[in-house]
Length: 118
Image (cartoon, rainbow, N blue to C red; front, side, top):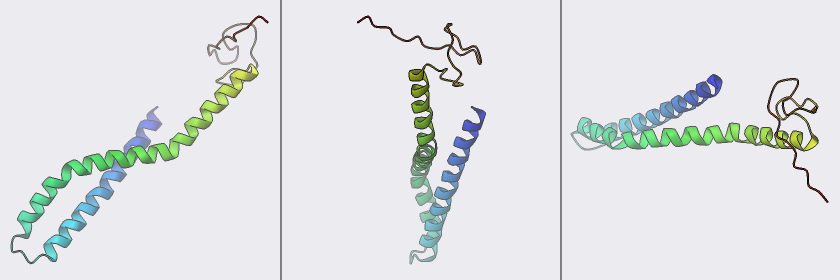
């Protein structure tokens, strides 16, 4: 869990760094290529306007990056878990299931199979 929090924090910081760099590049360009005599006031208003966009874009970038990297891994884990349960193995460690409702290898509670009478 600590590793996941660390990776999400890295995505947030990377997204924030990219967004700040783009904002400053655009502000610099507007300062140097503007014919107006008040570039600093324009820069201040531009940065005030872009702050909410920076926060939302950073969160969006982090969420998309997290889904692209960890989405397939989570889906793979879920599919493997269901296959293990269907085969009668422990969903956590794939150890063969015994007679008890708890795995004898790792101690994970094993869901009981539904038995239907025919």
